[in-house]
Length: 237
Image 1 (cartoon, rainbow, N blue to C red):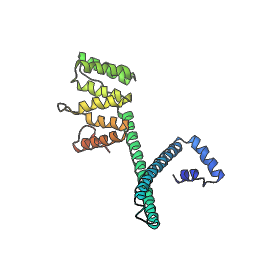
Image 2 (image 1 turned 60 degrees about the vertical axis):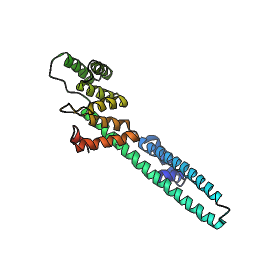
Image 3 (image 1 turned 30 degrees about the horizontal axis):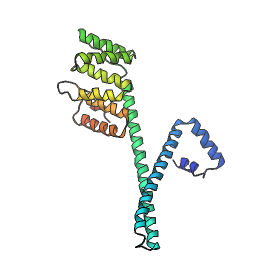
Image 4 (image 1 turned 135 degrees about the horizontal axis):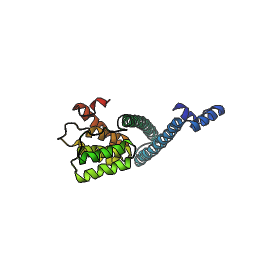
């Protein structure tokens, strides 16, 4: 971050600037750091301007009662407060972004490692045959076909837990996170199942959606999964 700041403050030598610009073109991670730094700086500057304007307005109303010396000290104090708030905001934002990116990466790795294929069913009836068809389509990578099969099964029987779970998983693989969350949430509320990964999978989908509120909800669900030793609790870090 110091190197980025020096670049934009024009304190690097010509050779260092050229080297930085060359690396910036070839290094996506550095480009992401630069984008984040610029965004954070712009936000901090905007917040500082807004707060300083508010402070100056309040101070202007008191100008008739206070001398120039008091105004000078008040402005200095206001500037210090704005600076501290800007720095605190930047540190908090940086920490939040890094944490949410890490959580999303963990969820993505889990999906790739554990949910790329589904296990088949051993029973042989019309319903399980349809499930097997959907599972086979899922494992072959035909996710849209698998989704249509699982959704059709749910239309016929909304209590079909296996179809509900698989419909959520295929939505998750298709990055249709809102639909995945709905399926897993319904599954997670059921109390009639011997094994129920609904809450754990819902947390995975929330992490993949990667929004501030969904990140918080995901963490609460993972704590619940671990506390009650629900399915998936051993995978919770």
